[in-house]
Image (cartoon, rainbow, N blue to C red):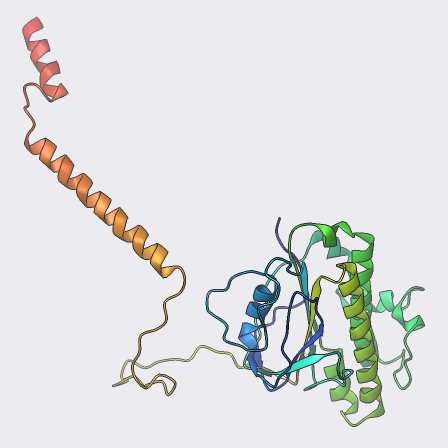
Length: 319
């Protein structure tokens, strides 16, 4: 079975600064407490290794320990919050690490989540239903009449709806396929741009978001029977200037990379030995086949070995 993936956005932009946090994790996955930076592009590898899968390149990051190899988590939930370096998470319960470079996540959504609200109109209509989060969240300085505030609250509604859908379809959390959830929340960033990060609205929204994320983490953790990893990535801004650089044919010499001053060869991946052996033995087999075929043709007796000559000889005799 294919892995269950809820992917609300493709995260392929550069990350500037920021933090990678572990909200909840089972006892079989051990994250060490320390100030070890992690490259953003290796976060999918952290999720894969924590779930017991192999990765193409070794991850030499001390934050993730080996853990129990025979009891791996059934799900990984990653929530990315845009517009803030870090959130005021409760101390002692959450482990956080500095984040560098980029984050890449890809996937597709399960058909169960097709009923989630995705357009602005659907999100607005969902908020004003009887069982929406507007009836339970303390809005404080946030307003029901502000489009920016409603965008932020609609993302919290999506978090609530995801856990509600899974609670109604518990077979998805109990199957034997690993599940990956990746979500991006940009409502807090819009509130910061609209009101300013020193505003009361931004402070209230940050506190509401922290409480909502903790509740979402607890719900997802409990839905998988305590066998799920819930991660949080806080991102100040994205570097969207990811364009292909042009090169000139008049360039005399190639600039050396400062990270490799000794002109070392690139590292081979895990598939190199397999591909090399396949090509080598196929070429040897083809060479032997050509040699054997050529030898047999060279030593062929046309009068006895060739069916063409035998057929022709019988026809001549009959005539």
